[in-house]
Length: 243
Ligand code: GLN
Image 1: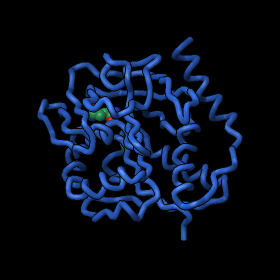
Image 2: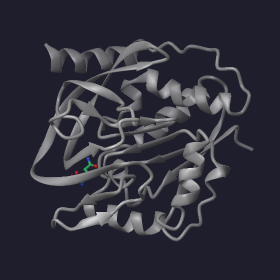
Image 3: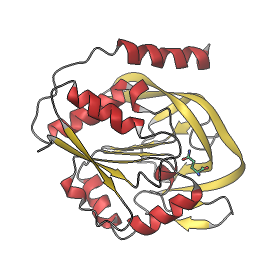
Image 4: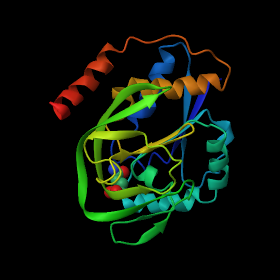
């Protein structure tokens, strides 16, 4: 029996940018703390019982796969919304981020309905926003930086001022290349354009999710890991981007 069960939503569809590395990172960091975890791959056609999982993850995909996934998830989105509201940890990256909103435009300019979990929308422009990106973020009042790589044609606009961005863009484009915001951080849901993958190079975020998962099971999050390699990788991107 695994200590933690993480649902990986549609890995055979939403797998365009190597975001599966986020799952591997979470699993290893739990293992290094003495906990085992089971990653349940959710395939099209599966009925999803979100309350069975300690965390939900979905990676990025092309517009075609995004459309397939929305049609799948639309039948479950009230349960997903309820669990998110109740603090279920969740990480949605790239196209998975986009489909959480009211709508997003695909490459053929068709406006596709999203899951409407939160008040934001995504519209598409011709030129893609591509490159390394560094954000200023904070957790429990402590500032930290987030480093990653973005590649998206979609421009995402947050409509609800109550929705906090994951971070402020220090270098890069972010949600739309205009408002200096990137991603969203709502309760224990983080949705972001940052690939890389995100968590191995940002151990603060990886441990944030692990701490939430542990706390929800009444397990005290104590041991800090030796992150000198992860932090070196993080600093290398910052040096490359910020000079
Ligand atoms: N296909 C979407 C876009 O181009 C999402 C890209 C991504 O997941 N990085 O905006």
